[in-house]
Amino acid sequence: MSARVLAMAFAATAIAAGCAHRAVAQADTMTTSFQVNGLNVILRRNTSNDVVAANIYLLGGTLQLTPATQGIELMLLRASEYGTKRFPVDRGRQIVAQLGSVMNITPAEDWTVFGFTSIRSTFDSTWAVFADRLVAPTLDSNQVEQVRARMLTAVRAAATSPDPIVSHLADSLTFMAHPYGFSPEGNAATLQSITLGQLRRYQATQMVTSRMLLVVVGNVDRSDLEQLVGRTLAQLPRGSYAWSAPHPPAPHGRALVVQDAQLPTNYILGYYVGPRATEPDYPALRLATAILSGRFFTEIRSKRNLSYEVDAPFLDRAIATGGVYVTTVEPNQTLQLMHIEIDRLKGELIDRSGLERLVQQFITDYFLKNETDADQATFLARAQIYQGDYRAASHFVEDLRRVQPEDIRRVARAYMHDFHFVYLGKSDALSRALIDQF
Figure 1 (cartoon, helix red, strand yellow):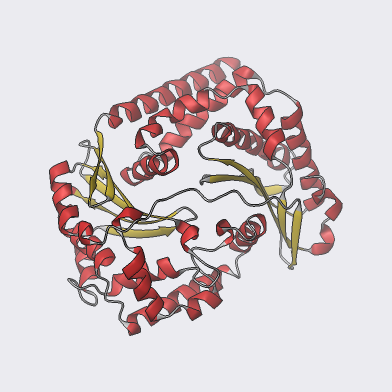
Figure 2 (cartoon, helix red, strand yellow):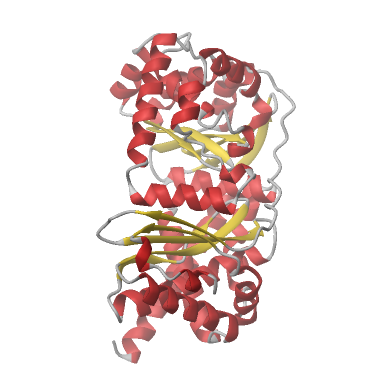
């Protein structure tokens, strides 16, 4: 590619990033927050289309769990699909299907998302079903058993797939004796042991408005939304829940778990613990992992064709988690190249103009991935939960642009060590001495 074409590409990226940033700032002038019976509500009025996304963030995530109750919140929410006080048995599902709305449940480490996407004309009708699932699920024993069976099938299927296996093991290893080591989806043992009585107690004690953050993005009037919330979710007990980020895990040095498997390729995933989301190192490490991921792609995939998938993941949660990931038939050569690139990031200053271009491209890509109403809801929720103010979302661009080459080198040195590795594949193909270098 010629220098002129590169310059044009970078200019286009910068313009797109600037437009995305201005769009967010402008949209924030249409965003308000308020409370209804202790339930925090954020409403972003988007009149550009008729799509409306409404998400409830049930705060706590894995902090809500114990070793014996992993998967309990997900089981409760899925069971609520099969009957509520106002919409018995399949009636709620039928109504949602007829309306063309889509409901979703996404459990994660810091919260569980329970939400829906509809159009403006069907928002009220969809809300009625959605809210009743939180307020008054029937929790019929036969229906709960159907949900249990489906969830057990899902976790058993995941236990035969390499990527879910290494992800679960790496989290468990990195966050030993820490809530992030729990699985919000549950495991076979916990899903089999959770009782109907436990589900009903969880519903009675944990479905409180102080534990909920509602974010709505779409063409909805505040007064209409307040009335809907007041008639439904606001009838739940207020409770006294106060979210706080989990404490960082106790450091326990490097670690390695090897699981022998005769697979066409070998899977390697290593994690390290990063800063809290409230710390200034957070955006710098986010960019450092993006730089490292690009270098891995160039050196390992493009130049040497050692892998079809290689990455330096960044897990965006209250305590950042970074790492290295690859599938390869040459684990030792690949690990050597990864270590070289990490050392280079720790030892050299990235070119300042190169960093500026990367930031522009990262911003553009990030906003392109967060352009739907549902994505915007989570963007606002992250700012509210992690920073204590949804308006912090509009600082995202400035935070990235403030990162300097010295910051990239510093966070690489500060966090990219004491990796916790999981290796799934031919055990005799791995030199464990290489793992000790990370």
